[in-house]
Image 1 (tube, rainbow, N blue to C red):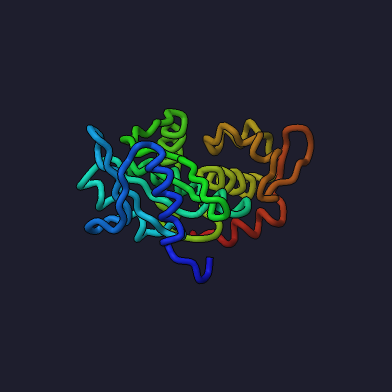
Image 2 (image 1 turned 135 degrees about the horizontal axis):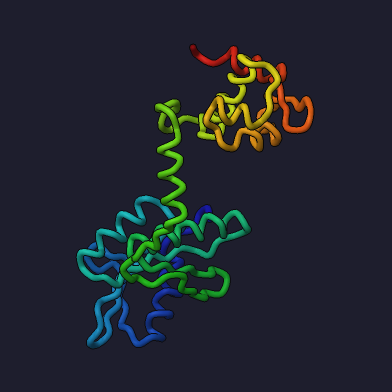
Length: 220
């Protein structure tokens, strides 16, 4: 959109509002677009060539005037553009903002969200999963914001199994369960996600060379 200005969005947005019975004026006070209709809340629309923090900040500031605040941006291009646009629509919903997209080739305006109060839908399954992971994670082995591999409950369980095998040699899964308290020890060793285990016979596992190396790298 190099060389284009936000003004290219105004005519399509104005036409869209006028078709709905609004009187429309641009650059009223701090607002890009203001629309009035008898017995209705004023509508404010902020125009930008792309989503940005500045756009959201401006739109949220307009909510001190009216609840009917929209942001308007050009229609996305390509799959990646749609994915980013969809994520931004979700953010705008949480902020109580409406979202319009404008097709610059023909001026068509599409509504993707209306400015209504957001009521987040809570997921009990996700909450329970989070609380369970918090309770089972021993200590605080990670650093907030870190990149790369994290220490998970699964990895800690695998390390317990590896330590047991290092100390006791090839063992049955049920013995590893009893010795470590890791109820999923047999499944964990069978799946061998980290490559730390080797199957000796049915239900019996030993530590692999990778497992020995992984244990050696752990702080005492």
